[in-house]
Image 1 (cartoon, rainbow, N blue to C red):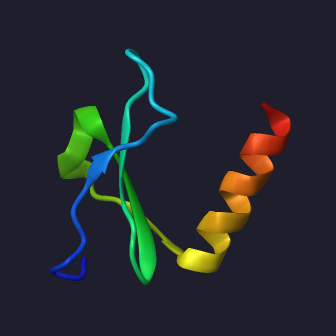
Image 2: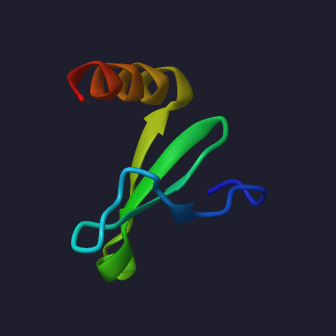
Length: 58
């Protein structure tokens, strides 16, 4: 993780399904309740595409 990236609770989280994201050159995603399990990493362009698709489905 780049030193300037900080995790924050995703706005897509709810009370039972929480994820945290750290956005920057790449986007990191982790389970709030299992932080020790590590994170997934996505290039920023892929993350933007994913969020756009999620918004269209909502």
